[in-house]
Image: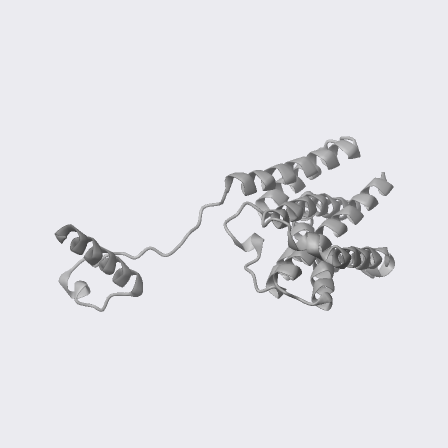
Length: 238
């Protein structure tokens, strides 16, 4: 089963590296920029996980195959650049969803192997899944998906909880992996398709309560509301 987990990890690196290449192409980066985004997306989350867990050296230093996989992904992408450029806008979040599902279970699995608690394993699974994408988006000057209102980190946490729970119940490893990937991927794809989002908390402008407060200068949100009201009154007069 260790071989299965290893190849799942490799698959996650390929998918995430490809998502980094796609974003680099859309951001009009050169081949070095493509390689940087592919690398930080493919191994960034696992590197941070190993550093937090105290694993020395980190996984890609021990096994440089991960680096060769990233180089190969970028090389193939360069040869098929015109095909990548024609991919729809929806391909990047879908590819990212598959990478998220794979890396979530890999992170939780490795944390449990190191003897951490269930809660720490769930957090390590989420970190492995979302950290690489966060670094990728920041370098591309985009708001990271995990910081938006979309269901993203929540999906990773749900998948991690499922894996840890099945591991605690001594379920077969294949069942735990399949269930965790299915939950994470299902939630993320559902969020993409139906635009599911968590509630957003924002500042609310409170209207003035007395004459003194009404005489105070209006804030920007208040000015906008007053302008809308004025436009509506003008339309009614017409």
